[in-house]
Image (cartoon, rainbow, N blue to C red; front, top):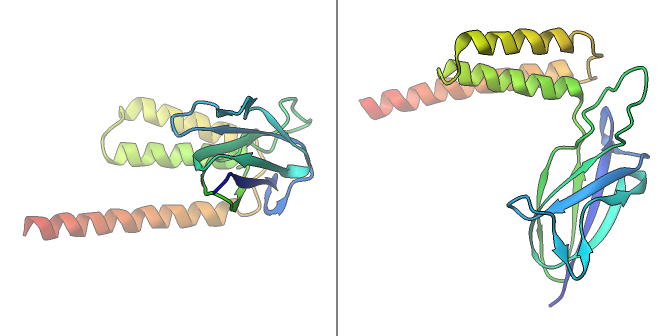
Length: 177
């Protein structure tokens, strides 16, 4: 029994199925969000040149994410400088691989819009403030280039949420009967 290895790969900006050629900075935390410190090493920030980093870790469950360069490129920053967070399980004497995806700024705005719609639908937000937020996000998103697959993903997620809402209504009716 021994340590495990984690290979962290980071997708290219706007190309989720291609590995980045850029340098990223990776952070590994425990599930409470505390930076992992083990055997005299602090696991953040760790440099990941060409979108790759391999680390040796004790067995356990960790959160991993990365950030790109903090100096913005001109004329636009097309991406959120943070990747999505992944949960990884490291086992003894095994190698685990994870790919981190840097969503576009446009996608992050969409997720906030979608979450706001769901909260409004469930009457968990004040309507006026939520509508102001929606208007502000849409105004900013209009100035950004759309990701290649944004429309397909957005349409799919909206249809999925509508289907889930219908299934939940049917379940509630069945319970009441």
